Amino acid sequence: MTEDPYSPALLPTGFVDLLPPEARTEAEGVAALVRVFASYGYDHVRPPLMEFEETLLSGSGLSLADQSFRVMDPETRRMMVLRPDITPQIARMAATRLQRLPRPLRLSYAGSCVVVLPSAADESGRQIMQAGIELIGPDSPQADAEVICVAAEALQQLDIPGVSFDLTMPSLIPALLEEAAVPEAERPALMRALDRKDAAAVSALGGRLSEILTALLQAAGPADRVLPLLARVSLPARARAALQRLTEVVAAIKAQSPDLRLTIDPVEFRGWKYHTGVCVTVFAQGCSEELGRGGRYLCNDDEPACGLTFRPDVLFRLVPNMPVMQRVYVAPGASTDVADALRGRGVAAINSLCAPAEGEAVYYAEARRLGCSHILLDASCIELV
Image (cartoon, rainbow, N blue to C red; front, side, top):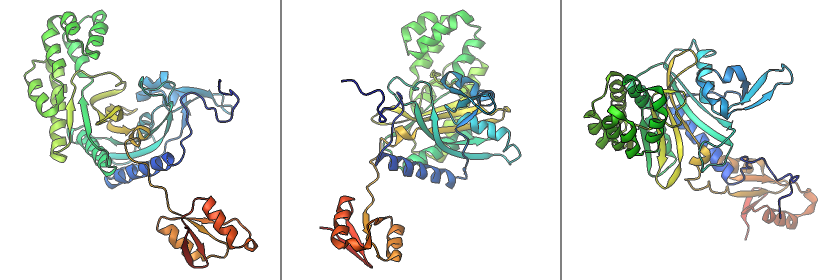
């Protein structure tokens, strides 16, 4: 049988209803993330779900055009865009409404985004949640390290096991190819070979860069092992500067969080559309999907910034669902003070909608029907058996 195309339960591909208890787990998990961000001085902002096309898809948002749903505003007749990513909105806010605030500017956010297509083949969602932080103003290894360490603290508070941060410098390979004057026509095939981690193809296509590119390709893994290998690779000035920045960021992270698990992939560049410096992808043991990603970029007025965005819809699949709240049925005439006290202790005190004349037998039956463990009669909380 095929599903009724007119059923009210049928949703567009990539959009889902989030039901209990998953919805509560996500809501309380996002709140926990925001609390950690706030404890490090990141002030919360809430950009709009839609913006005018020429505003959102400019600056750092230009690369998001192919992932954006567009609609026409019936009032102004201008095209509007459903945001596919919140980071460009933070960049816009920093360059406009928050321009006069002192730097460094620390901001956090959480909200839904809508993408035309999932970002990875094993994902199906087109409405995605994002929660993250942006540090705007300073351009330093210490700023990059702070963003990563705050993110690590947030994951620790959520008890996410086996977390690792994979660092890369997407500008390294393009800088190397440009400095070596590799012809434009030859670069796409070489970049594809690097993306596929195809050492034989890299060696065949790399020309006089073959030895360097092969060494970079093979130097991937734990940061403590990779950095000494990278230090021995002979690189031209711009590529060497990019690698030096990566090394300094690792040192700054280790100074703040010495036990943090760091890996490095020096030739990874896929998916980094508007980033300009050190970037990071967050993984957890046993999960093939990214928990989050971020890195250094430029705001709309070319102000330096760095940030990291979590994917709560992925993140909270790794933690147990929030326990169901204990439910108490508040019978007609019961003490409102006791009911309020129960709510203050994290208990769901459910007010009765029965008429007072219906009697206790009806109240008990209704309490059991609603899944309550207790009933509040007058000022007494009685367990249901």
